[in-house]
Image (spheres, rainbow, N blue to C red):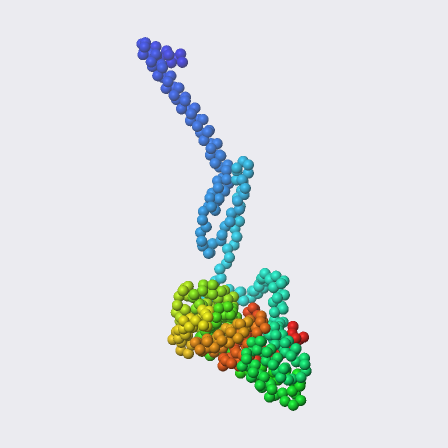
Length: 458
């Protein structure tokens, strides 16, 4: 420093002082630059080291971000499901190991397979099918399903006619206790039959025929009287025994009528079930558009038995619904079409005229239709059912009768009057609420159940 100052002595004051200050300032500035450059490099190294020290953490975060993105839908790529490890208290991710599952292999068409692959596939034995466990119904339902086939329709018919059997033959038993057939016995005999809804005309016809049969020694034979009565009743019912509906022409259109409350909707559901069980494709059409509940009930029955169903809007023209139903049944290849009609009083001529119109419209939609016109009668109404059948037959030409609710009345004898006074076959009878409780009417079976002794009814 002293040598440096001696060099500045030739310069006069104050120039020598200024030069010294400038030189010192430049020297200090150079020293600061050197120190800054040295210490700056040392500080950058730890940053780089820190980045290099945590490559796994950066990669892990990158993998997590990639997993969070939407998966690419490609059926030839395997799906990757990363396994996320919980963060520690220091919030450091230690390791992420994604698990890769094999995507389900798509079946390659045979046209794209090589002969070697086909031969290899033939040599591989197929895996046995896995056993599929179905939910078993409750024990009560299983027991009901087991018991139902064991009870034949004849046993149901016998138990269903028990009230009618007791009402007629239970009272006739008191008439026959005298053991002798005379005028007083015949008077009591007529009274029992008439009050059992067999009807006056039919009762007098039965008495006349029985009187001619019971001659000589047999006139005092009570058992002979019972057997003769059974033969006469069977003869009357045989004439009314109608053949079951047979869909010769497809679709076979069946029109169902009846007053309110006779069980018409239930009967249609049972008919649909009966025809479906015989292998026919059935459609049910709800032409009772005036009562919304009737359409809903009929739809429930159709869904229950698995038949097609067609309905119109509430308040629509029933004839239009019936016409559409015929056209739809043709298009769908239906075997039997059952057309429901609105329940109506047989004493209202304007309502009966609507039935006539509906029948005409069905005939226009398909020639010869309806092929069957069924009238549903309630056995509990007794002689009123006979009057209903007469008026409905005049309006729509009834081709068959369905007699329902025989199991809940003692007036089942009305079927004898219907068979005797009306030239209308009895097609079906109902003896219960079950789907299989509506069957074809068979005169011999009916008479056997009706005349069965009380101690054999079970």
